[in-house]
Picture 1: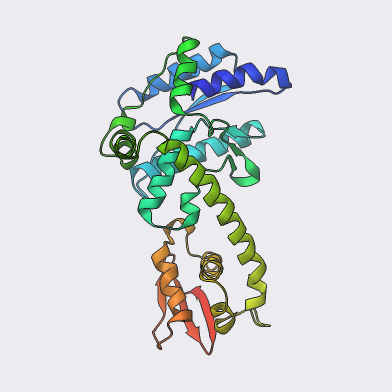
Picture 2 (picture 1 turned 180 degrees about the vertical axis):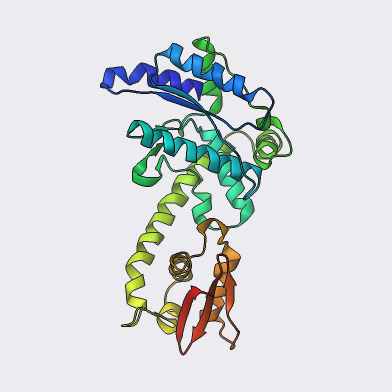
Length: 290
């Protein structure tokens, strides 16, 4: 993040852009407020303006890592609105991307999870990740050359966190077994998976209208005729539109709903997150609030 702040402070004035910085204090460690103030001081020293240190309250939903991420992005979104910013730059590197791909693979949640982080994402493309093609070591070297102090978050080495174990145990073990180049290969996998997932999403979006009847209900026979990857995307979208939280809707949920189409044996309704129910009625698939 400090390497990104330095690069932004150098490039923005040449482009006639105003660039600021924000550091988020999650309050999960003793002295985290002092550390956040130090980071803010360094960003001001680089010439960024405005600079903020924002404290957040981390909840419990989804586990500690997910809760911290949700709180952090909420703070970033609020800062963007507060200052009328065009974008938020994030310091994720190619190594972070490789870790994200492996985590998605472990969850078994489909090709979209293997696509990792997008270079541009969020509402209106607000999140930008210009360092996704750089490895973490290059970013650290950039800080060393500029004599920028680098602080390593203790959570990044805490084995209680899945990503930390993956970073310090999983990836090194893979490189030992498979040789160097694992990180680069995983990053390429992310891009290829993203291209495929985008194409399938577009196909599903175009196909959805053709599988609904005049009343807008999903027709099971027409859904059955679609390739599974396209059909399940339509089912997932329908479940989310009915009120199922996207973050709680897993592959196993969609597989159960899909069996109402492909393995119909008179089974009853399928309960989904968000009190959403899916059931087959007279050749139609009905997904709605229970």
